[in-house]
Length: 476
Image (cartoon, rainbow, N blue to C red):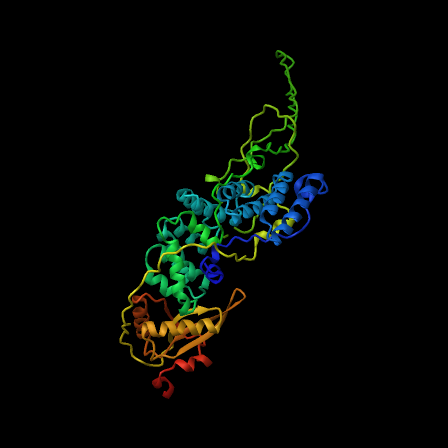
């Protein structure tokens, strides 16, 4: 899979492995001074791992991050980095176990949650992956979850999330490409091709369909996720080292207030004396560590909202009743400052492993049938797509014009700002009424195209549009 194809086709499934140097976690969250030997050792190991990863020494980076986790076992950030390295090395089982540990420390971590679901899909556990994706509802984005559902063998659930995103006026290329891939996984290659063509050049459409045909094969298995992430799965994964397992750690003690002494009530002099006992202060209780998330699970996630206050584990335990576990919302997640930048990482594009692909499916395209539409100057236009630059907009127009018989129309465009990004919306106008505009849009959709009707928002012809205007339009 080429770098360009990987960047667009799997834009939501990219796992960033960028590591930055920094200081250890502050003593306020740790419950002990930040200069403790374990903290210093963890910080040194993290710096060594970051340097090794920048130099593409993946094995050295793994060893360094394993030392960091061993020195600071309850640091969710170091574990998240180690899980990412396992995933980049193609060690899906090790990555799954480590992402599960991250989620035990930080249940709201979206990137760990999405990555955990992907490893479950790769390991042939789609039911566990779907359960994790259900848990991420309202936490992870619909664009991420939609494609993940399709990869887990539930394309209908993915399409239900992706269709509204791709059809909205603020639709992004990422949402459209995820929708196109979901249609391909569902076997609807005509719609997959039409939607993919909105953001890539016509010359690249065939290559994209070939890549997706390999991913859609029923026997793709682990290769499907490995191809999307651009990694090579290892033949034999030894799993996460036993010494790093979170379940082996002693539970962190919880500070409790002393019980107030019981005061003896006033005694009636005539009554028989009763013995009054002053209760001793309550002994501290030590809760067990919370069980791992379902299947050890849970963006392609992002920030954690609330930490877990932990203290030094004691050398002995008292046989006292166990309190109810705290609600996740009241927990603090311990995460070193050195790795907090991973909460909003920049996507890292990595080359995919070489895969022998079957021949691309061939499609016979019928000549477009254009609906009977009356010309006029109503305020309604038919929007055909929104693109990141003029070059992409022009390429998509060339493809759409020939496919859907839009030669009589001249393209219009208007630029909008969407979350700091400039998008170029392409539309056609010249309809007698809204009904005529909807008639043309319905004809386009019947042929597998994407469009919707809206009012003119300042759309105007631009320089390249004149090259595609018909003689009738030029002389008007």
